[in-house]
Length: 484
Image 1 (cartoon, rainbow, N blue to C red):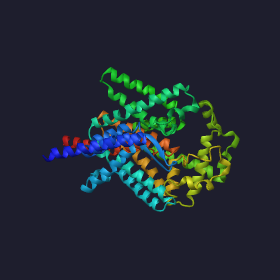
Image 2: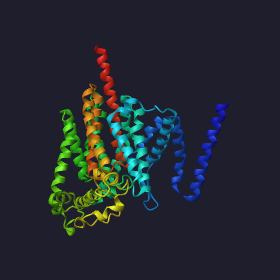
Image 3: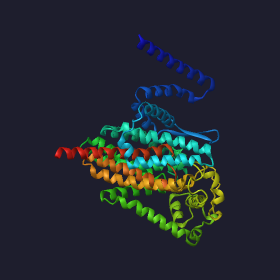
Image 4: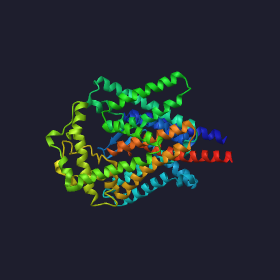
């Protein structure tokens, strides 16, 4: 009788929610109110079977859209970010009930330790922020990001079928967005200047779109060899998808994304040759040499643009040529902000200005001779380099921790790859390392880790590598025990 009573109450509550939603929609005309019943059902699902709810969450990421409210002072992505809120609350509830919820091996992994240190230092930077409200919002968003994409995957990815499911649940909606944008762009003649219009409403901008494509492309490529022995229909379909990715990435007209794909395959080769530990030290060394060259005798001033020669270009060819000539507006605007960021860091080197604070303080530090037509920055974008983004807003400790994280992730990927004998896990390890690497390069020219689609792939790749690290050690130990 108790069960019958509870079911009756549950049905009554559901009917009330449905009725009120319809009534409010009829009164206000707001279509958002029609989503209330679905939100209610999703909350119930999180309580009943949160892992199923998590797979729905993964499926929603590629098709989620960015929305802004109250004149850009408040923004979110729907429906995936509200789902992250639920998962944060769920995790806190689970952790409160079972303090030792997270396994010891997870806490002891060097990647986890670095991310925890990053999070602790983020809290410190928020405490000393010059824009405390914006910084607290950043901290909250980072918290549910890490819980959703780095913590909870520990309980989701256990067997090979889980990785296959995640691949399909992300690929299918991703392909839908690619096809829609590709068709829109086709109707515009694949015009270089109209790519943003083709993307509108689905991705934040062409940089966001191109980054997601370049990060997921290596995973699709490495999935193809794993279909060997499967039906020719499956193999043919996956091959068509791989071929489709190539023009899609090219037609985003994003130079960073193209470079990211190349860098990801360099990491692939480096891991296969056991040389990946050299990749980041060489990269950092080259960046340091360029920085020293530019700073010495203020050499960077020689690269200042002619204001009237920096402009948006009508064709992709002109855009590339202008890049090498130093006449491309977006490249020169990056230099304008990079210089400002370096000069800003001198005043607050330890804690920075606080997360989400760069825009409000950088212009007095900029060098006016590097200004371009877009330096007014009405879109309130930031440094266009994740290292400087960390340096300016969270100080040297945050930037150093990020630099260490990249080296440690790639070094661990190589170790994991050579521990595995199973072909599936070897390919999976390479795929996650390449996804991470493509994300790193894109973020060298932007700051995208806090965007919901790029951040999801970036942190999921790290989380899966941590899980694979444990898996590879367990299989290696089991093999040693069986041979003794």
